[in-house]
Amino acid sequence: MKFLHDWFLFCGKFIIPYLGWNFFFFGSHHYITYIKQKIRKIKRSVINLIEKTNVLRRKRIVTKYSTLVQAAILYIVEGLSFQRLSDVMAAKYGVSMSDTAWKKQIIKIAPVFYEVMMTYLNSKSEEAESNNILGYSSYAIDATDIPLEGKKGTVLRAHTVYDLSKKACFKAHIADIHTGESVKLHSVKAENLYFADRAYGKTPQMEYMLENNAKFVFRFSPSQVRLFKNVDCTEKIDFKSYLSQDNTLSSIDCFFKGKKSVIKLRVIISPIPKDKAENAAMKAKKKSVRKQNKLSKDTLIFAKWLFLATSLSDVIPAEQIVSAYRKRWQIELHFKRSKSLLRFHRLRRCSYNYAFSIVSIWLAVTAFVYLLFNTLFSQICRDISSFNVFSLFAFLIS
Image 1 (cartoon, one colour):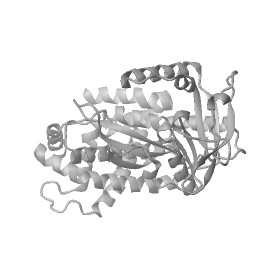
Image 2 (cartoon, rainbow, N blue to C red; image 1 turned 180 degrees about the vertical axis):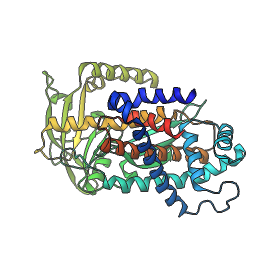
Image 3 (tube, rainbow, N blue to C red; image 1 turned 90 degrees about the vertical axis):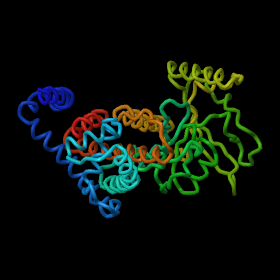
Image 4 (cartoon, one colour; image 1 turned 135 degrees about the vertical axis):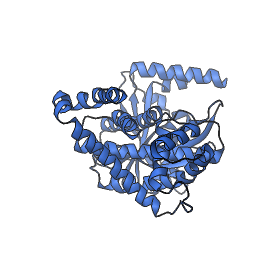
């Protein structure tokens, strides 16, 4: 009876909404078979790469890499404790080990699984169909914090690069909380376009992008960046004077002092929708109260506007750049969905090394899901969302 319940639940969530009732009655079995084949194919390819690392040197109880990879995936997808993982692996796969032994094996496989998964995703990303933004291969750079259960503050931070053209997060750098958000953690490519939020909107980060011949659109806070009207950098820009009374968009040229020379930038100032502007002002007030700082009038004024610094030429209309920047939100959705649907809101109390291992597995599983998403999106149904693919993966893998 449980099988029938799960089957109809699956059809109601995935097959009928996207492929219709006819497909439910006549083609759903082939659809499920196809997806399972794709999951097995990805797993087989990844396992073959892991085998080459020879991470399992003493094969006593766990004799197959496939068993270890399956255990790592189940641990994240099902949100299992190691005791529960031990029970599941014994019941379903006939591998009997203590919870402590499984913990050691998972920690051992974690960094290898992560590195192999990222390498495999990169290779497949190069083959995938690309939809360029503003004529460039485009990426979003951001970081997400991983907190610890029962404790305030962050344990680890995952710094990632998300491919906006191919809808996949294919690069990540795991670091502790003392490593700030910086584009210098990533190797940026010349003539590619990168989007980032205010955490990256500093002149040293912009200069790093230009040194590598990379294009960028970074949001910034006027109070935290020194930009000038003239090439001599003697007259600082008063951004308030560029805020139009009729809420229209502005585009201006400005300059800043680099390490070796003066650098020219293009700044775009765009009004934020009224509801979002009110929310931004509210957040600024709450932050001021929390940090016990005096809130300046300029902060409230600037909260109603979007400030973008870019290296893109004047040939590209400012409206198109603002519209393209809003696609950066996809990386925020990526973090939200991969955390909620893979039940990865907080880490259990653990050591730093253990936390590093578990975050590595989470990123590897997320990469696995996005490979599956790109397959389904391109070959079966272009309307399917990453949200449903995360749910679909969790349903079929367990």
